[in-house]
Length: 248
Image 1 (cartoon, helix red, strand yellow):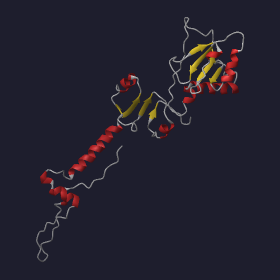
Image 2 (tube, one colour; image 1 turned 90 degrees about the vertical axis):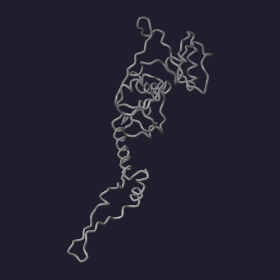
Image 3 (tube, one colour; image 1 turned 135 degrees about the horizontal axis):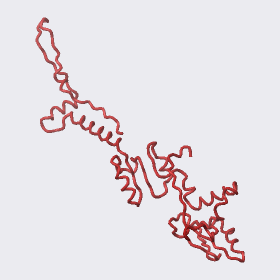
Image 4 (cartoon, one colour; image 1 turned 180 degrees about the vertical axis):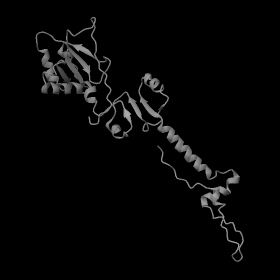
């Protein structure tokens, strides 16, 4: 909210404040004295007849700014950095919601991509977004796989629900040793930052293991007989609303 603006507002009473001298005093007569107005006020009065702005206009301007700030306080400003039209459609259905015109002045931010740490640091207390600090530890496949392996090492019984996992190229030597058995096994390879099944493939030959030190992949032992629904593989996803992460 914009700060209140203090103005020296001109008042006509300054010109008509009487200074009366009593009649019983020697040489007395009624005298009406006008204190000299401030310089800025005097200039405004002199220019009033020429169409120049009068001193009353700054008060109107200040009141207008306060009204705009008051209207802004009643609105929820949303900032969308997304390619999905449905987000804009949903936000515009609310009468008290308005799209932000500045990337810094907003109440709610929705972003499709990762948020840099410095942007988190600039957030104000009232601003909300659809990300939280450190969420890439579970949203990136390589980080998720690495953290799951650490938890399995500490709690082997509780974390045996996911298949054997290797982070490539870090675990390349150990992963290639899985192909020494006589019976060929199937492994699934996934890019660390992919989605919607893009870039995923199966291999049974060690020669087809991707060797690209500029990219990270996650390799897992392929489950040959997974649980199916009507003969189809499926995903079970749980969506949870995280209302706060302080403390995380």
